[in-house]
Length: 121
Image (cartoon, rainbow, N blue to C red; front, side, top):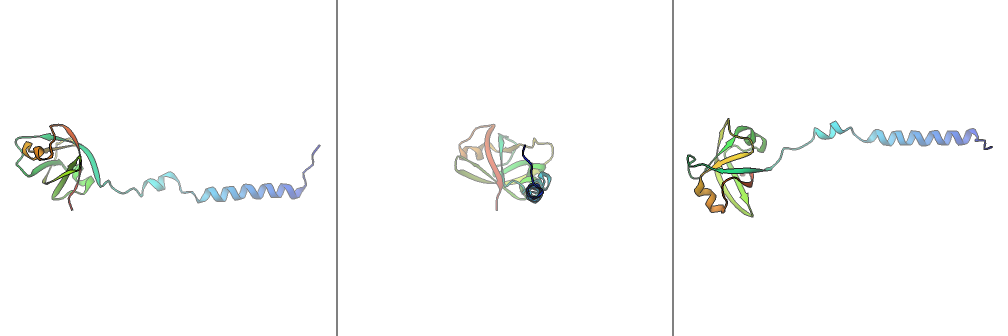
């Protein structure tokens, strides 16, 4: 039969206290989630619309707010970029941008292609 001395019991309790203090340093998941920065760019679908003027793009107000777009939007695909004047409207799908077909020819993309959109600075 093994008998533990009171000295050994105290050492075990000290180890448990050390682990608890280490764990208390780690912040809860909810605290980490609050520090998330807004996205700088987003992958979206671009649609050809003949009623959009050349050099302009119609974008959802919510998407523009999320990306920080106020005046101009930059569309990029396969390393090519084009800057368009942004027109903010309600009622447009959030993950779509409407542009003139002639502007899309310069990028070499077709209707309903996936592109990257960001605010032009």
